[in-house]
Image (tube, helix red, strand yellow):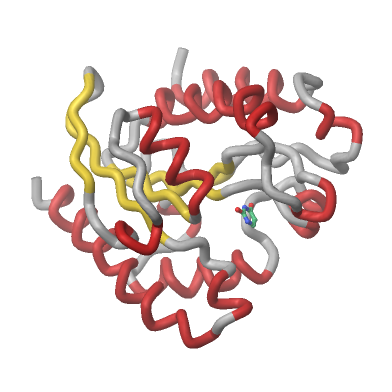
Length: 197
Ligand code: URA
């Protein structure tokens, strides 16, 4: 099966998911969006109000910040793939529970293994914890590791993991934008290095 066929099949499965109680309150499932042949996959936390309404990731205010960050390193949404830890909105945008994360992350694992990006960039603490745990990296506070590059080797080859702050931080503290822009430079550098082989 091609990547497109595999993602389509997975999308059908996720759309019909009732593995946790979030399916009762969601308007739309937010599976993920973007290029399946990208070098970088971003992982956010969970859909918010706007994403739940539209069924697409990062379409609200945090999405606007993300677009600005992408643009700063010459990227657009069509150049990347983006998915969340949870595919359904937690009511009132509360934090995901452990049970929800356990129920939903097999879908994210499958997305990662279909897309096989060289770089995984996590947005915020929940995705960082999940991805660090999955690839055997020592858990740390996001304040200590944001913008750093972690190399991991597994059967799929070397991958780089870059923990980033969630773009929403700039929506409640605009002073943080400079730090987000600075951290984002590393994404541009990694992709440039990859293009040069
Ligand atoms: N925040 C996230 O983590 N994901 C989204 O899709 C939107 C906002």
